[in-house]
Amino acid sequence: MSSCLNDDKNSTNNEIIGKWKLIEVQIFGFGGQSSTDYSNENIVYEFQSNGILKVTGGQDVSHPDGEYNYFFGEDYLGGTTDPKILLVKINESKWTYNLTNGKMTIGKSYVDGPDLIFERK
Image (cartoon, rainbow, N blue to C red; front, side, top):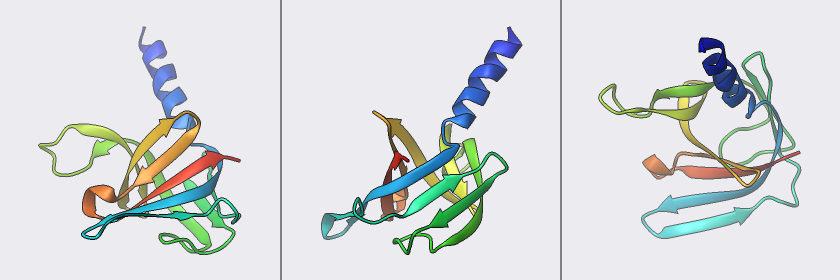
């Protein structure tokens, strides 16, 4: 029975692995919400199984080209009194995570930062 749980956890951990093309950035702030279309750019985030994220294709609002350490799994978004949620940590910076209809969103809108929207490449 525990192997089934481990398989489910591995399945979840593997869903981020691969190349993702940035298609949109949403920014939330005091002035409201704004959106920038990146679908004509070729900015790619490649999440590798060894915990390395490679960003290629140009500058977005968050990460210039390069390699970053990342963690994908459950962790505390805020303090340890908050429930653990599924998130992405890129160089220790926490991003919320959502995968819906093949589009992945990693976000910092919880602290008035950008949400990055990707589709699998």
